[in-house]
Amino acid sequence: MFGKKLGMVAVSVSLVSMALTACGGTGTEEKAGNNQPKDAAVADSSKTITFWAFDTDPIFQASAEAAASEMGVKLNYEYIQDETYKTKISVALAANELPDVFEQHAGLSFRTPVLQLKTAAPLNDVLESTGLGSKFLDNRLVKEEDGNIYSVPSNISTTLVLYYNKKLVNKLGVSAPTTWDDLQSIVKAANDKGLIPIALGGKERWQGDLLYNMLVLRENADAFDHAMGGQAKFTDAPFVEAANKIRTLVDTNAFQKGFLGSAYLDAQELFKTNKAVMWVDGSFNFSSLSSAMGDDLGYIVFPKTGAEDPYSATIGFQNEKAPYSLFANNSSKNVEEAKEFAVRMSLKLNDEFVRKGLPGYAKSDVKSETQNEQLSAYTTDIGKTKKTQAIWFGLVPAAVGQEYRDLTQQLYGSALTAEQFTTQLETTLRKTE
Image 1 (cartoon, rainbow, N blue to C red):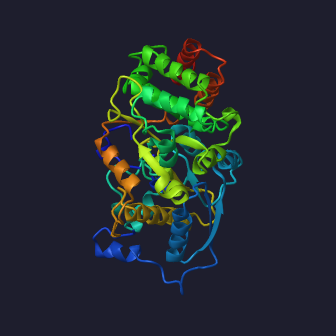
Image 2 (image 1 turned 135 degrees about the horizontal axis):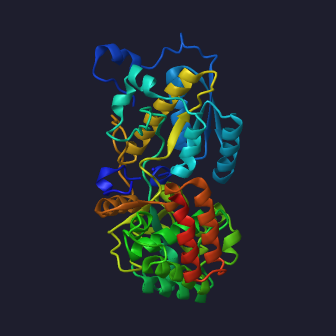
Image 3 (image 1 turned 90 degrees about the vertical axis):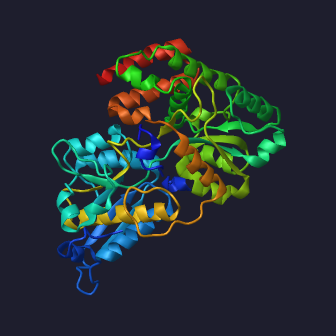
C-alpha cells in the first residue's frame, strides 16, 4: 500500500487511519445507468454481504454501510483486531471459510496465499459492466499475470514517521530530534526524568522490524534493493551499522522495560498517555493520535541517523504490486453482489481519503477538508521525498518473512551481535532466490 518517487503513488496506509489510516460512469449512456444506486424498493434485500475488516478507522464501517445501502443489500460487518485477524484469515483461507468480502494487508506475504488458493473472484466483469473501473487512476488496479484483476484498493499509501509529545519534549528542555546524536540526547534526558524515551510494541515483531528497515535506509537508500538484486550483501556496512544502532538503543534503555513482550496497542497507549516521549509508527495514525493528544502531538520526518538525507527515502507500508486490498470470495453464495460491493466500497473509502485532503487512488467529486497542522506538514514532507521503500516483509515470501522477523527479534533481545545478525540475515533473505 510504492517504492518509487512519491509523486507517482498515492500518499498514504491506514494514510487512512493514518491520515489520521464514487462511483461514476464511463461517459457512455449505456453504462451510466449501471453506475447508479439500485432502487431499494426493487433490490433483493434478502441478500446479505458479510465483510471482515481489521482497520479501526470509522470510515471503513461507514463506507461499507454506504456501499451496502447503495446496492440495497444487507451488511454483516465484522471487525477483528489486527493481529487476531492475521491468524483468522489464514485459517479461513486454508479451510475455504472466508466471508463474502474481506480486507487484506499489503505485501506479497499476505496477498500470495489468497491468489494461490484461488479464493478470490476476478473483478474484471463487474468493473466493466458497472463502468466503475474507469474511476480508478492509472496503475491503481493490480492486474495479475493471467490478465485478471482480483482486488481493489482499500487504503492509500502510508509511511513510517516519528511522532513526539510536544509537552514532554518541552519538559525535558530539548527539541524534536533531527540527527542520531539528538535522538541519543533525548533518550538520556528522558531516562533521567523517569520517562520512556520511545514506546515500542515488540510482541508482534513488526514495529521493531520496521525501525530496523528505516535505520538501514538512513545509512543507504538503495542498500536493500542492491542486496536483493545481488549487487550487494546483507552483511555490508549499511546493514551492520543499522543493527549496531538497534543494539545501542536497547543498551541505552531507549524502549520501555519489557518492550519485547508489549503489544503494539499497549505501547501506543504509553505514548498517548504522556508516559513515552516518542513513538515510531505509521502515518495512518494521525487521526487517532490527534484525537487523543490534541496540540501535544508533534510530528517530524524520521531523523538523519546515517549518511542519507531524511528526504532521500522513507519506509512505506504499501507494495504497489501487493497493496492493501479488498477481495471478493469466489465461493460466496452471493458472489456477484460481493464483487460489486468490494468495488463500491473501495470507491467510498477513496472519497473519505480525498475528503481528508489526501491523494486518493480514484477520481472523486468530494471536496477536500482543511488538514490539521501536523498532517499538512506530513503531506509537504512526503511530497519532497524521493523514494519510498516498501517494508521488507511485504517483498518476500511469507515463510521467509516470518523467519526474518524472528531473527530481528533476537537482535532486539541482545541475543545476537550486529555481525551475527547480518550474517544470518544474508542467509535468510537469500532464500527468496
